[in-house]
Length: 422
Ligand code: C5P
Image (cartoon, rainbow, N blue to C red; front, side, top):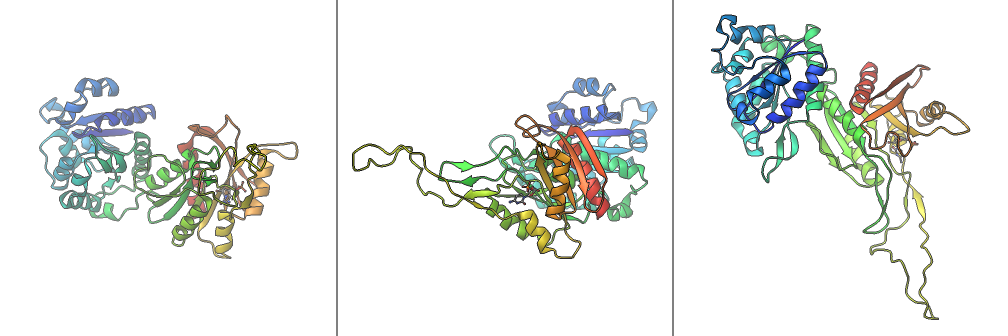
């Protein structure tokens, strides 16, 4: 497919190099159209070398080929990353003062814009009005991520990670290829991805159950699979709440509720799930917690006894059961169909049964709609970028084997199953 990668003049232009690589490696024919300011950040030679094509910023080069019209007309997708406040303003007001704005006026394919700038500029009513105008006209504006910006600032305004933008591009290309990419008023009404209008809750990470102010009982979950599920759902148009016990950076377009313990996670999930269409329990929730919390650090040795010798016996930690959040969700919905509940099962095979057999038994026990079974071990899955899973559906004997692939690709497969159920 023909993709135009527009790059405006922001420091995040360097991240567009990775997006270009992902698009090219996926077999797309990418034409880079930077603005003149973008070339202050990443030079023409870099874009030309990475795309294998000449790069122009104005409408006066190769004039016989009428590039200002042709590039936009022939595109299957235009993605602008980063889109600066100035580029958004020029696009919203229909200016055509450089090659990129000409391309935007002539394109009739899906258009994706990823704003990136300092928080104040992003939140300014002028920028927000321009984003609203562009959205109304059918542009898919990807909300910026929150986090460290250039200099000392933090807040909303970071360009989403290239992998997340790539996922949005793949979806928009599919939408365009399906003939669902009208322009103008019709585009404003067109659905943005197959999870548009859906509210989903995803949990991620391993809970920590504190023993004292210093120590906790935890597990090896990194949270990467849950974050990938949240990022992909946002890219497919869902409103996403991520209840996270991991300390990873928030994906763009996702509201993060940070929790630490299983009880905190249960309260957050219960509050957020009330209005949800889907709940995905990807978190590794601790089954047990210490029965009591010591306000002060538990000491290695206790006070000397009557005979003057220090008591060096190890303390005994008593555990109590945590609530099963997933089981609680299934029980709370009674006979109703919503929300669709997806569970994860980290399994190791043993003498009694294989990973898959354990998974089937768990699906029956938990009563959720989908169970994603993954084989785990000290060096398998945890913290890795790749995953291998078997997806089971309630009421079906079929097994969907996925992987080994990236956790993002696993997330796509899981959402494909969920959208089928929805
Ligand atoms: O029974 P097991 O812990 O293997 O089940 C895993 C699934 O149950 C995961 O989806 C996990 O998020 C969820 N779970 C839960 N509450 C617990 C333990 C697990 O929701 N206390």
